[in-house]
Length: 253
Image 1 (cartoon, one colour):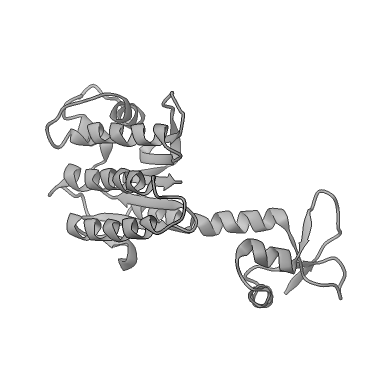
Image 2 (cartoon, one colour):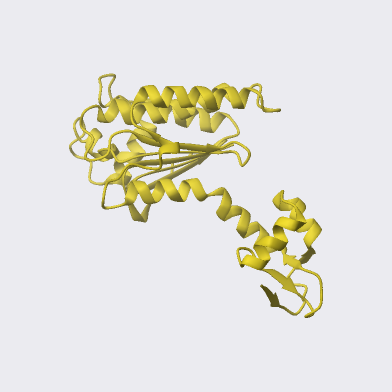
């Protein structure tokens, strides 16, 4: 399968060899993808060689990179509760701690992360532990969390179908009006040292790590979303269309 396309300056075309190098696959793999229609090539002429548009390769990489995130997002926002895929399901904190230990061991062996692996691990651990500490025996439907990562692509995903931050913080701040207010409060103010409100305090530890180190965080709960990166001084929370039943977090580094 292939497409015919006129060359232009706007469409930056590269060879199959360069495309294979960018994607980290062989030229034979790209030919096979082309034949199956999985990732079609471009032909400037009917008998020409397979070529690719750089912009489409970038979009392909982005979608591939975010595959775990979309999987977690769909699970956390689905109206019907179901166990996530077994490879990413931590039904209790013991399973989560074992898997995060495996992730830390892999990070320790990655070049350039000698000083950062412990920060990445502790930040991930705080978010995951919050889900278990916060919900305890009060999971609305599916207990446990979604936990997956792609260290080659430098991202980690966590999600739960718990009660969410608004329900938790309303126990001590009943005046909270919506998810956005609760999410902002959780990342900016010290609430109390008592469980289960402790989640908000732990998220401030996460915020400090993100602001200090070369990490980014996307955090969603309900219909609210917060984004943070190194050096940020302001906390900006916005509304989103998709409702997350518990919490969803994406850490990149």
